[in-house]
Image (cartoon, rainbow, N blue to C red):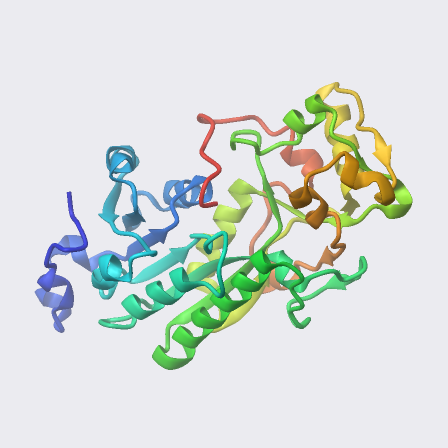
Amino acid sequence: MPALRSPHSLLYATRPGALPARFRRERVLLVGCGDVGVRVAALLRGRVRLLALTSTVARVAELRALGITSLVGNLDRPVSVARLGGLATRVVHLAPPSESGEGDPRTLALVRALRRRSPPRSLVYGSTSGVYGDCAGEFVAETRATNAHTARAQRRIDAEGWVRHLGRTTGVTCAVLRIPGIYAPNRVGGTPRERLIKGTPVLCREDDVFTNHVHADDLARISVAALWRGAPQRVYNANDDSVMKMGDYFDLAADLYGLERPKRVPRSTAPEHMSLLLLSFMSESRRMDNTRLKKELRVQLRYPTVAQGLVAPVTGTLRSGSSR
């Protein structure tokens, strides 16, 4: 099992002809190889050499079965990822920040490791649409200033800053994807079905907020496109074409699944029925513009609306929802 502590001196040869054939292929490193990372790997398998950083030794066999070489290390222990530099020609960074604390030391640790030796040609970072904060239902393009209202989104802004710093100081083409709610029938917790069965209510129409979505398969395709087509230090809204409020989304899902539509409650009584985390999502309203995604990355969405994605045929097994 290749580990970060193992020397890979051949990777650092300066003459291309000195590299073994297996190292002349593009080498893509997945940092945060959860559900979306595995989907990215499926798109790239056979075209590149796939590497993945994992902090769990138990995942090594699972990743090997997917054609991915595991590199055991933990972004919370910077010394354990110090040898990442020079291993990959391109990086997809989907690892989330910590659940608490200031900034995002995990992304900082990755950036410091990557710049030590032969930085990659490109890096794609999976951020969140939450960095925009509440936009009162307005359409939001990537040029809009960030205005995060939650500590979770503020940590993502810090991560975006470190990624852009890497690009500015090393010439790495860094693309930031601002990702809304991810869904897919073959993703654990990837549809509203369980919430509908539990009978969790939604906001009444006059208090409801606009919400944005992207199918996990489309997000994987967007990530791959950005890896090769992304412009330097460029931000891309990674959402589908749906324009709908949250309650309408759950009504649609209920109708598609043959379940009862959720009860509508006013915002004033919502805390009696919903968790603080759920309420935080219901405090922000925006409609994301994905024009740049289509024009610059030339992505054609396979599931342009949630109505199509929620009933799409499921292929493969349910995937873990962790680490994106």
